[in-house]
Image (cartoon, rainbow, N blue to C red; front, side, top):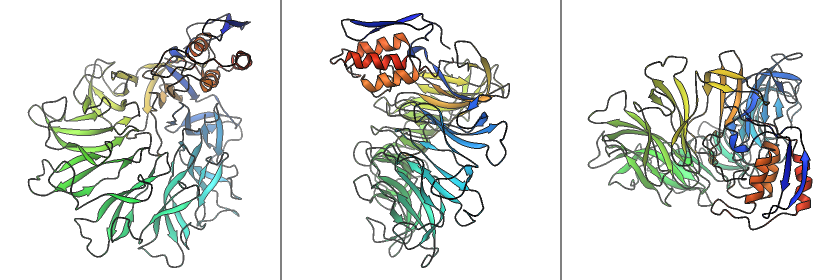
Length: 586
């Protein structure tokens, strides 16, 4: 909550503290640095654009600017099962309604009947899969579509029953899209129509080249091989509009030892990144299995795989590989010593890749002293070398308990790792055995929230403490692959909390966020865009002083080198001082 109030603010814009004016404001809140928890939405409060109140929420996602989007349910006069769902986003600067069941679906003559959770990109735009209400405008064969705000306003991207670009067939089903900061989508879909068989009835489409186009289709030649695709998995999409995906092959010379591969557009055109039957870098063996990849903005992939060959046993046949260093390289292998322990890796899963080519993953252990109580951990390359972040059986920071379970990692571009976990120990029961942890900018693991603890959810200067009964967060994401993310490169994290009184809400934590003074949009420098973000999320006198002092500074410097036009700033400040919207809650 905001611990202080102010009666006036003096606006000093130049480094030599030239005072442009003083305004009597009545009351202002404290600096942004005090905002450890921001309340985005709360059940029982008005749901923008509906005339109703929020009643529940799905797990939200967060973009690079610290803005959230989520699917929710409303209650109140006029609300029924046909119009109770909606998607809300802060992408426009404040929380607003994007779509609602029972309302018209753009690009169709039908209404939405169901909305999937959205993906929010860095530009504040959403994309989602939706279903249409059966009626004159939609039937059983054309009632699902993908909608996106990538063009500026919500628009239909693709719909069942419509023509599938690059084919003479129609879409028969659609999956939830990946979505990047350029407003482009990519998705996996099925086909129906003349010439469509079980051997060529699925494909991958992307807007990465500017308009919706076919990337790959079952039955077509797989680049880098003389074989055809026999199966395709859903793609991931980076900020450059490039896709990556896992596929399987069929054709002459294809067998169980070489029928699986990962394809990527990271080089500019779709090409084979790695295939079973080929040499596994860092070993003297060949790949025998490949997992689905993760993908970053540099067009690099990371994945886990299994190997076969001379000297390979069930104890050392799995590893994690990454292109983070420029070429596919081994990151970790079963049978090798696990950093931070005296045990060996026995299993490796779920690698995620950040924007600077670092991986984080889940590993299992074997060896002396290893039991079911301490056989799982999370490792990360975020510090520059592979490091143990957390392990089952170790003490959980911010508690007097130990970890009894760890989720797959969440990873950001600053090399910070986050995860959710379960607890065990004295005083731990079902009411307080779940928590969320993240590393701060120094690498120190920090408790973000725990069931059984209290949060201050009040939107004003008062206090409204509620006891957490449940926390909801998505794990296993690396933030640059077009999927929903919860942990941005600033170190901000979004989560859902339910409380013992039956209420719930969406919250953004800043506990481990970077804090270049005045860098309100978190892009590593202090400029005019930070002043606009200050208007939106802070509005305090001390926050304005931080911005003024460091205007022109980047994260590697501390001195302002340029000063905006004072008259322009004065007008902006006068307009912005009343725009405080969210507050600290912890």
